[in-house]
Every structure is written in C-alpha cells, then in structure tokens.
Length: 491
Image 1 (cartoon, rainbow, N blue to C red):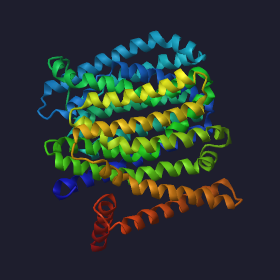
Image 2: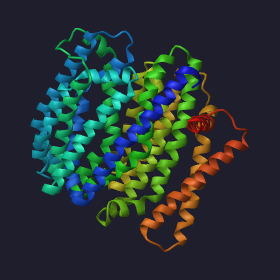
Image 3: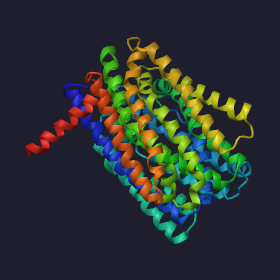
Image 4: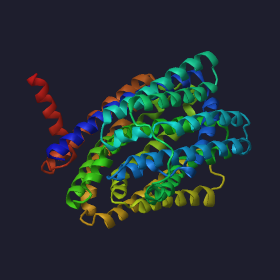
C-alpha cells in the first residue's frame, strides 16, 4: 500500500482499529460488569431470544448495504429503495417473531424466552426506521463519522443496561438496554446525516440482482456463527447457553476487533482496485499479512490464558466456560486467515462463491453434530465448529485462485507462516513456564501475557531477519511505527 492511496488506507485502518477498540472496551466492560451482577442463566435466556431474532433477521435480509457500497454510480433513488426494502424486512421480522415466540419457548424448554422475544420486537421496529444514509460513512470512507455513530449508540445502550442491571438484577436489563441503544441509533442517524429517505421500490431490480446472493450468504453466515448455540440451547439448559455465549463473545474479540475495522476500510479500497488485478493481489497479500500478524497471536494467546482470564474477569461461577473459550478462540484463528480472501471474492462480484463457502462449512458442521454426533454436548459442538472452519479455509483459497490466478499457494503461505510458527513458540513458552509457579490466577495471567507477547515479537522479528527482511506485513508495520516515531520526535 504505497503512495497517497496507501497512506489514506493505512490512516483509515489505524483510525478504525483504534476507535473500534474504544468501542469494544465499552462492550467488554458491560459484559464483565453484567457477569458479576447476573448469572449465566440470565445470559442464557437473552442469548436464546437473540438467536431467534437473528435467525429470522438473516432469513429476510437482502443485504442492501453491500449493494449500496459495491455500486459506484448511485443515486438518491437507490438509497430510497434500499431503505424501503429494509423497512419491509424488519416489518416482516417483527410479525414472525411475535408469531414464533411460543414455539421458541417450547424448543428451548424455557417459557421466559417468550415475553423476552415479544419485547425485543421493538429493536426490530427501530432498526427498520434508522436512516439508511449512515451507510454512506463507510462507502465514502468517512470512518471518523462512522465511528462516532456506532460509539454514541453503544454508550447509550451501555449506560441504560448497567443502570437497569444495578436496579433490577434481572436479564430484563439487557433487553431494555438493547432497545435504548437502538433508539439512540435512530436519533443519531438523522442528526448525523442529512439524508431523508422516502418510500420507493423503483430500483428494486438493480439492488436485488446484487443482494439476492448476499441473502444466501447472510443465512449461511448466521448458521455458521450461531447454529452451534441453537443446538446447544435445544440439548442443554440456559446456564450452559449463557456460558457458551459469553465464551464465544470473548473468543471473537481478538480477531474481530482487528479484522472488523480493517475490513470496513479494505472493502471499499479493494473495490477501487478491482480493475487492476496486480494491485489487488498486492493489497490482498499485504492485508492478509497485517491481519494475521496481529489476529493469530491474539486468538492463540487468549486460548492460552483462558483458565486464568475467566476466573479473574468473570468469577468462579463461569469456570465451566473455560474449555469453550479455548476451542472457540482457535476457531477464530482459522477465520482470521480467510477473512481478506472473502472480501476479495465479494469485491470481484463473486458473492455466490462466498455464499457457497459458508454453506460448505454449515454442511460439514451439520454432518458432524447432527448426522454423526446427535447427542454431542457443548464442547464437542465447539470442536466440530473448529473443524468446519478449517474446511472452509481450504475452500476459500480454492475459490480465490479462480479469481486471482496470479496468487500462488506459496505466496499465501508466506503471509501466515511466520505468525503461525511464532505463535506455536509462544504457546510452548506460555504453557511451560508459568506452571512452575504456584501463585494467584491474576499473577499467572499477567505473567502469561507478558511472556507470550515477548516471545512472539522476538520470534517474528528474528524469523523476518533470517529470511532477508522481505517486503510484507513486518516491514509495513515497522515502517509505519518508525514514521510515527520520527513525526513525534520532530514535534
């Protein structure tokens, strides 16, 4: 990423990662506080209701945001049509949730889910009327405004949720807090963007031509990310679902909080370079290298410190979730490696290929936990999800080769080889050394983090020097650090 465009992308990526982490810290704080105020069973009730809302959401989602971002010659009529489609989507979801709430209560064996679902329909109504114009923040790479919108919406939900949890000591705090966050989002969306969409379906055909496969992919994505919890909810109890859900949320953090903001920057950047396959290939390899250099050790490290982290951060009541966290963290290592390739496929209009990849993972997962292991518990289900993600990774790069024929397997391996090997060395050190010390969980946690970070940085640096300091993620990040240091020294 050289030149003006590269600098712009780098600054945008750094801005989004930094801001996303600030946003995520609010989410982490909320989870940790609620874990002390509420029980795993409380989390389970809300998680079960959220799973149903999410399932119905993807079944009606036409992915209009993808169509709006991907299309370059866009007019107000496109925005109006997208907003109208979204209104219809969320209106249909609201009706389905109200009708299906009793069935969900029967499936999970917990009637508390029914009123929670019914009240949560308010979040759907609010999501439908939100100003579609805020998507322009991402499309036009105005990421500071994008962050402010998400940040203030999150703060509103956080304050409402924690305040109500202190007052009520009940899972209803999370439900009403979610509604408050959505309401804040609606108000902010109209304050922050001047667009005032109107009812229209004049561009339906154009948007649907792109979004029809986005719908198929969205359903697959939802099942890939949530089918495990749906099955666990039907096979176990609310407490296990709550523990598994919190473990999944924590496991997702290291990879997602690097990948999600970077991908918001890279997607429009990839779109701009799609006519130049040589440049697109260069951007892809560098993006994947940067992402994996950070995301792989973060997720592996979380798996290594899980026993201490759960006890220190959540409390002894949550210790049963440790194995879930360890396996799910490794699952997101695999997903991190495939993230950039998936966005290249979308950029090149291969949304159908992307959908097929996700559905292959769902089929593999279902074959394991429904066909071969119909009585499997939560831990085995988590392991099956890890295996399905590995299969998806292989298929992803097979499709990538069809689109970017100039990308070789060796080039892809080079981008992830050093992070993987350095993470393995980090794991050996972290597993071996702290176990020799009989100290408190908090002390062991800090020691593991310090030791792991030191070993990883040294291992990556030495391997990079040993192979002749080639161009790639290490050089790119190193140059940015040196440049920032020089600018700071100059001031």
